[in-house]
Length: 313
Image 1 (cartoon, rainbow, N blue to C red):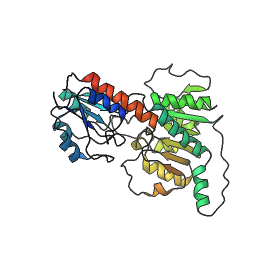
Image 2: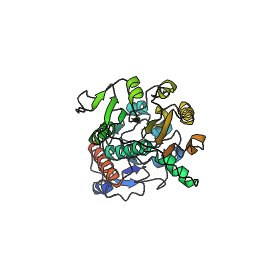
Image 3: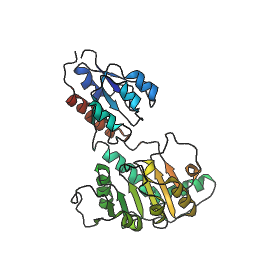
Image 4: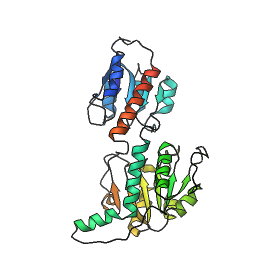
């Protein structure tokens, strides 16, 4: 397998200089990229596949055509946990392994979600916009201590956020029908149905995967049932919330704040909601901290090495 290559496509790693990639070079694998700093498109990926035995992948969409071009590919290793950008059935049929860096970015995403929750509770975005307009808004906010934070999804990120909020004195109610019922033990923590979380929460943060049918977890009915002035935070997937219903309820004031790190297309198309004074956005940076990138890259590299049989020189 001399000259075997590993395709590196996450934008944060695509200059191939991260020290963790040296572990690949040490066993004779060559890290390669397409266009450093740019998310590759289908043509880029198809052109890069020849000679690649492994792929350290990001969130770029992956089509069946790309996998068809990957004749030597043995493993796709994500530097995160989301794999809904991959054609999993095709990969399984071809015997290509899929690995995730489970938990590597949990703290950084949870901290961003917390930032949005606090921003919404204190109405900082509306205050900022007002001052920019030459006004002097003094909007009464509220503390997180004693507030109820709803969490949809108790994977690594959801659990991390729950623990942080509990340590700050919040009450936490979570919906997740799949995780261990004993995952979190705290007097101010409880589990509830989706309807209960929506109805009781001052702030709701989403940390769940997309349903298999692609439907929104918070559809028009659920978004409409949120507490008056509720804070919504989405660092997971844009499709988890019905965007049309969300825009309408932001306009009416039923939803008081929306903080999002994810969009249906990235960069997002210009839509009216992006300019709403109750919306704060970031450019899919939930896991983009020095610490998170280091953890995720080391885990992704080790997953590749664990799936391949050397030597490569």
